[in-house]
Image (cartoon, rainbow, N blue to C red):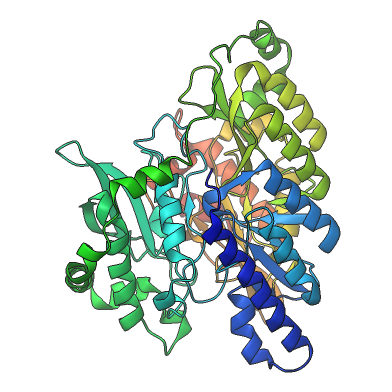
Length: 550
């Protein structure tokens, strides 16, 4: 993984010192709330319902074991012994004390981490495929380009105060696991007709109040022009993005109102003026790639005489292996998912004790690295087949081995009213109810890939618009209700879910989800996925059953 150089470390250290001074001035009354707001947001600090919330950047979802231990230490020392992983591959602390936040940032700086630009109207954390570098469907590892983008975006002077927040995702695989079509800019590694590898650039995607699928603005651009083209897009957005209405300030609205053709013309004209002075040299690209070399894979990784026997004799292990591990490009290795969706835990949450042990297991089983997924789970990317059974046993003891990756209980869920000051409705409690209702694992695995996404407000932090089943909390005269959508997807065939009908009451959500799944099981064709069935029959059969008693 990328290691800070002297410039990186100096920048982060000086930022910590700067924010410490700003916080002290605020606490002394020398800065007003309005003056402090922009300063704290640029350092990842929100004011939530019960306490400040600090969001920490995890660039492209990659952590070292030392960084994981530091996250555990912060949870234990400055919070309530846990933290929350997000859909942006970041981590959030929900209970820090304002006066201690500079101390937290100073601790993070000791392990090359920070909270810079994790909030505010600026370029946010760049995300990527959690299986980058190891997946079998990859054209090229996207992480070096993520790092190049990270360095370009950090404290970029021209784009520090954009019309609205701005998010970039990068993928190098055939299967889009990074939701690139729903980002302000999506970047795909592709090969042109000449066999050269470059980038396809998408623009204007986004979720929230107005979900829009991104459009291709450039089918192919050479690697050397990556940053100049992204800069041209940002310049046009910064010049023409709406600043009079925050709900219309995202680039997706600018592209929609301007039209893709006209927007492309403006970007291309801007790019022609700047591209020669911003070329990425081959030397620069290779230098960054040098931080992402392959680990020392073992030739005997699959040498475990007992592996087949373990699968045969232990159904629980066999189920976990099938559900929570993925193919690896190196023979004898698997990528292992650590489920943060146990039935008795809020989705995405981990305790300090779990994190400490995860760090130890990463050292033992996966070259000291941990990844964060788009769906709020963790990954050990490089586990020997010979170590899978021993790892599984320890993950079971940690409550991180629930075999539900890709099932209905692998829900994306925001904190909702339990923490967020913007939320209209609860989400964590509903997730627990759904988990309990679907705890028959045989049934769960039988229905296969069903993605449930639930948000407590229209900001859509849990991406409910693109859930196979989407759940959105809404407020009706002080009462919590929930709108349901079906058929969304953030993967290759991106789609925005269709609203099922009127919102349902809080005590009816779990039964509605169970009814939707029952309709699927009854009416599906052989081997037909949930998403394929919704495409085939539409929402009417589901709607009729969900509202049958209304």
